[in-house]
Amino acid sequence: MPCQYYQANRPTPEELLASGDVDEFVPLGEYLSLLSTLRALKKERDLRRLSLATVAEGSGIDKAALSRLENELQTNPTVDTLHRYASAIGVELVWSVRAGTGGNFLR
Image (cartoon, rainbow, N blue to C red):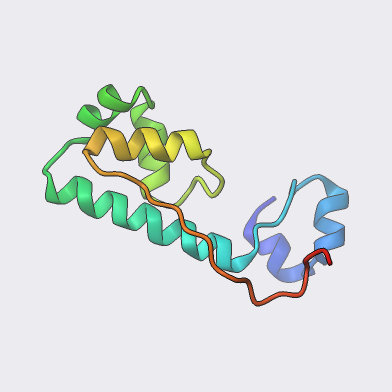
């Protein structure tokens, strides 16, 4: 549906899920972390003067899919996709673990 529909009707998250327009929601912190990673990857690609075609060839990822990643249109890439992209531009993704701020843990 067009953005105007959502702006005019302001459906709730429950309504969006029930309508099938949305499969799931990504927590804001996770989304911002993903954007930061994608921007860093694009910056590295640009610094190394690698074309999308070169990265596509090296990663096995379609050039159009890489473009969607870099333009933040793909909001749920797989870990494999991110690692293949990073490897193709000659960098390594590093994951870390830190204490969360939420209270959702088992005791």
